[in-house]
Length: 112
Length: 113
Image (cartoon, rainbow over all chains, first blue to last red; front, side, top):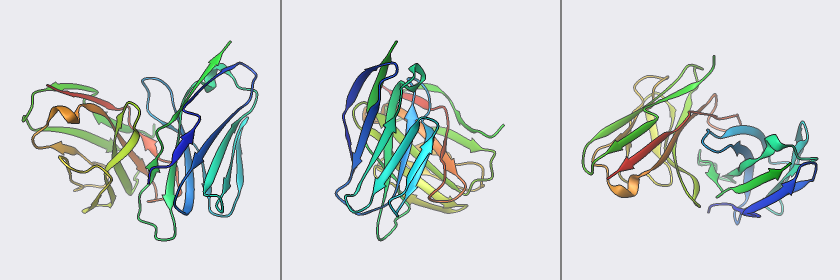
């Protein structure tokens, strides 16, 4: 039940906005977002819990629609430092099984 | 400095030769896990541990073993490595089993020939 991320890859120019989607076929309890730069470890961005909340982190924000079983990551006025691969990780509801299942990732490349 | 340390960073080995990848965290975290990362497949969980002496299988546990004798250490053991275990491995830890930030180690690139 790996979540599906879209798009698989995106190329933007610096200053443009991007949206990365994460969808699950199962009901979700939480969604985790990470960014991984080439050759480095994934780095935590944010967690969204069941309840439809939206979180923000500088110019990166995310929403979680539990009814639609999906989350979206919004990157506003993208910077060169935003380049990397973004992963969503989902925890399924209602029976929490202590696992986070990650999607295959979305590669984001920002051009100057 | 809070960190998760994996060793070695790079390893080339031959089929069938037992190996251990070490993972240590200095944050007193209870939850630790191992992932493998393969092109186009994302991060897949191998094993996880909620506390000392408590471990459980993730999504791809075949061919791997783990142990959690101390809170800070969570080694990954490949008893008889095979070429399909060639991958990039990450160890991660978090303060709780869910709903908190996971800290990842720098990764171990394993090649089995």
